[in-house]
Amino acid sequence: MKLRNIATLFCTCIIFGACQPQPLDEIRTSLDYCHGQVERTLLELKSRESGIDYTLMPRNIADTVCMWHLRKATKEEWCAGFWPGVLWYDYEHTGDPAIREEAEKFTASLEFLSHTPAYDHDLGFLIFCSYGNGYRLTNNPAYKQVILDTADTLATLFNPAVGALLSWPRHVKDYGGHNVIMDNMINLEMLFWAAKNGGGQHLCDIAVSHADKTMKNHFRSDFTSYHVAVYDTLTGERINALTHQGYADESLWARGQAWAIYGFTVVYRETKNEKYLDFVQQVTDAYLSRLPEDAIPYWDFDDPRIPQAPRDASAACVVASALAELHTYLPTEKGTYYKEMALKMLQSLGSDTYRAEEAKPSFLLHSTGNLPAGSEIDASIIYADYYYIEALLRWQKLLMDN
Image (cartoon, rainbow, N blue to C red; front, side, top):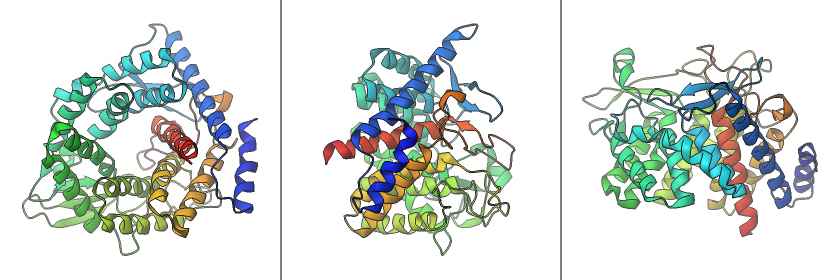
């Protein structure tokens, strides 16, 4: 069955009140589509003049081209962990030893980060998406050590006076203090994991402190989020709140809110503190209430050009994955609502509008990276693909377990 027919299945489920995800065979069809695109990407990389350079990672495909733009895996390239993560997820789906071998080779290119001083907060994206998934699937003890060492490195960015991890050391002077961006919520998962796997309780304490500081200072009264909060490095008081990638300081940048939904869902999972579950519902509701009809957000909910403004499929992928987990903590009407909304997101992402299909080797189209900087606008972006395949695998597991 063509993926475009998934929309019919989704609508049937919702109209007749079944509240069920895609049938298991359709989830697998979607994952098979992703596998085909992974193989296309690998073929593209192998066909380049020098063959595969395992230190070069797919990053984006502009709307006017059809081949991946590659970036060197350096401490500055925050997206370098997503392609290895995609490969690990594809291996999880297929069990293909050739995919595992490629995942291992790309993952190995990031080992240097475990013994390199922290450049910024993105070590969780870099290492937990790659080595984290690799360890989960292989139990390779060398992978575990890389994660533990990198968690210790990430912890060096923690300022006890502030109670939060520094996001961009290079921008302290630019922002006038200890800057924290919402994206940093995703990197806490590695700290929680490390604390439970030999890294020490202090790593969990850092993660909880960071979450509490973010919960207190990163949100407006309506539970919409600022992208950046800036703190006095000595007193820990918030001295500014602004945006870096959104439309305006007081606007709602879609992916920032998505990071918050995903991150606070993880914090609840790891702590089981009800205050986080209550809070993440408020943050989620603020996001869901402003979505357009197809449930794929515009890059910023307050861009005055809407409906001509670009979409951000990557934000939808992050939220669809987060809701696969969050709804399981809410065996109520709210949980059912979150499930239905996640399915609507996957319905749209699986449509001809958002799938790359034959046009490009990526999974998806129409993501927006950093519009104010003129970067990755209406493009295929690797982290959209990462969270898309993660969302599909999470829904597959839910179907298999129920």
